[in-house]
Structure formats: structure tokens, C-alpha cells
Image (cartoon, one colour):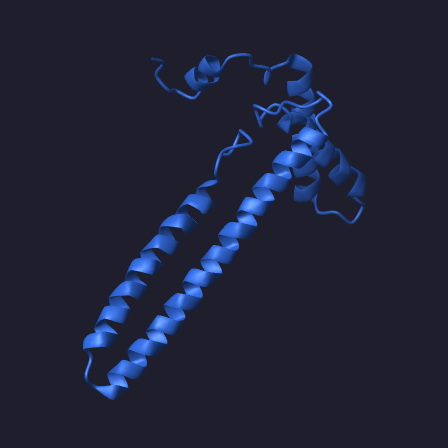
Amino acid sequence: MCQRTKCIPRKFNVLSFDARRNEVKLKRLKQKLETEKDPIKQELLQIDIDEKTYGVANMQLVARDRMREIKLWSTLKKEFNDGSFDTKDVNRHQLDSYALIMKNKAETLTPGSSQPEVFNVLGQLQTIERVKKSGEMIYNKKEQLTHDLGAKSD
């Protein structure tokens, strides 16, 4: 997960490799077209070239849009950073966010809500409130978190 403002999301990296792979395939298709003598096969190769060219152009548009989103998101985070949220650890606010979500869901329950739905929402809400009250989710060190997950420390 991307936790810093300057990191590149995984999907963006995969898109980069796909675009480069498409560029190489495009070069290969152009080479085949130059040596192909059969007009029908030439036409099919040209269709493949057009398709790959479109794919590369589309990937470039997507990449530009993702970079725009990353820059905009970084700007917004700086602009609205009043110190009330942790910009380094995305997990810090999760418990509060889930509590709000579950409170909203609890308020929308009706007498017509199914029993599993009621148990699910109220059970999660009670667990969140218990965890918040007991402080179970509070951690100060990355090492403690990785230890709790079973990872070996250096």
C-alpha cells in the first residue's frame, strides 16, 4: 500500500511494464510487416500494429492521468493537513473510520433488516467500541506490528 506522497502505486508500475512490453511487440510486428510478401497477411499485420499502437496510446493516457491524480492527491493532503491525521501511517485512522461507517450502518437498520445484517453491524460496532476503549489497536512501533504478524526482526 502506498503510504508516502512520493510513492508510485503498484498498478502504475504494472502499467509501465505493460506499455514497454507493448512497444517491443509493436516493433516486432513492424519488422514482420516489412518482410511479409502476402498482401492478406500484411493487412492482418497492419491491423495488429494499429491495435498495439492504440493500446500504447491508451496506456500513456492512463499513466498521465494516474500521475495527475497522484500530484493532485499530494497537493490536497498538504493543503488540508491540519495535523489531525497521520500522513505517514494509513492505518492510524482506520479504527475511527470503521466506527463511523458502522454507526452510520446501525442508524440505517430497520425492523425489516435481516437478522444476519443486524448481528453483523452491531457485532462489528461493539467490537470496535471495545477495542477503542481497551486500546488494543494502539501501537507505537513498526517492529511491534511486524512481530505481532509473525515476521522476524533484523
